[in-house]
Amino acid sequence: MSYRFSILSAGVFGLTGVALGALGAHGPLRVFLDQQGTHASWETAVHYQLIHALALLGGAIWLQLDQAQARTRLLWATRWWTLGIIFFSGSIYTLAVGGPKFLGPITPLGGIALMLGWCCVIAAAAGPRSLPRN
View: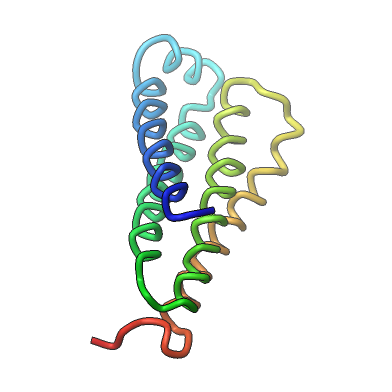
């Protein structure tokens, strides 16, 4: 995943997070989610998607650092976050609208991917000579 793809992913996930949040809060989809008892799940998926869209954006900007070791770790963070958004939020969206139940076990895998992304950020900041100390 490149810097450009990370920025693009952040934009797409941010845009779709806002759109899916609005759709889940109003109109026919809101009624459907309420009938299914899955509105809270939908909101959770939107919340995590938007948080990690911002994380992707920050990671992509941080990728412009000159420190090669930090760049590599941050590149992995953006990869994990992208996978995590797709698996975590994507599976919850699908399940909330009555999608196949076999997607349920994918949700925690997405959560693990999101956490691994944050671990990569910590490694980038804590690594030897990875970031300027000013």
